[in-house]
Length: 315
Length: 144
Image 1 (tube, each protein chain N blue to C red):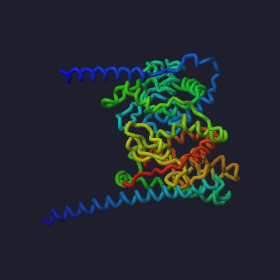
Image 2 (image 1 turned 135 degrees about the vertical axis):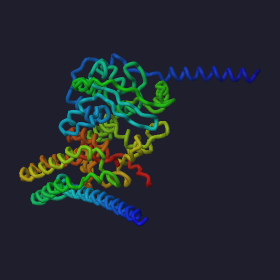
Image 3 (image 1 turned 30 degrees about the vertical axis):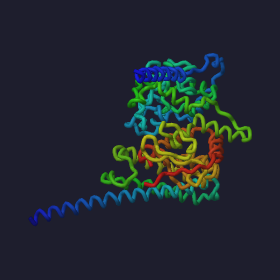
Image 4 (image 1 turned 90 degrees about the vertical axis):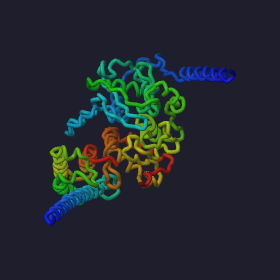
């Protein structure tokens, strides 16, 4: 008799706790009064598009088109479709072209900013952090608004987005709310007053839109970046290999000068004459389009990162 | 009985011969890429100012890149698709595009040789050469 009462109490308690958690972790949105009138800077929007690496995930890849000139145009066609494999299942990258039916053409500026800065979709649903809003949350609202304008200037692609293929329990979006409580701090970028403008610009580009740490770090079992390995390399989440350590540690880029790094971001060539391929080649196609000053800023910040150990485990 | 053994032996020899061709082409391919790498290191160091600007060195290096590009088209035989190679199967499916890339690099290296006359023209032209490396690797090289 008593046992059944206790069991019932515990069950009701657990139900309340889950409801409370659901309420606590419900998607939050930016206030609409944050979007006052302003003059759009499309050139800045393009810079954000380049450093943000939108095309690397969202461009529709046409395997049959191998021509270089066509591929340069491909990166502006953000119809999605790429499959991103992960330990949590396979994510299907959505269409973010300005098509109103299949893309984000019907999204308001507020909805776009909510996605970038809060990881919340236009139906007020949590977005999966395979979309790296954990980094994008550092972006300024002005930069996000310029990016919104630039994306709307790109060609419409009429490819419907496919649903993600995630097993239980990862297919329960609601659960992302708890993940965000733990791993999304919601803080904008804070410049370091003791450092110069180049360092702070580089820090902003790398920690925010560049989202470099999202690939170049190891993650915990819940898929969040382990702070002790930030930029120190980690396994490629798709299971394809190892993403290198880019801190100035012996395991990483200690031997590289700032100029080597700048040069690399422009050409994809390491000081040893090695040319990157695969995902990093996509990054270089974007960073090559930044200004020399921005690449210099990124190199300045990279040189100043705390050196952290981390290298590919021996087979 | 002896005919069966002879037939099996012939097949074995044939199989090893094919296998030897595979590994030889793959080794040649890797040597070709290393040749490119050595050339690009020289141009990169001049671009960064690590070694002094020297027009004759630049011209010789660009010539090497041009010649290597001609040789590169001979190291992708059909029977070298499998084995210890970093080349993606896509490279063999799109052979004409692959070869077009090498031709484009040879053309650009030859053009650069006549256009580059001083440091300013070198700085402007050399990046176009370097861009070929990642462009091809992005499409035709396996992830590390």
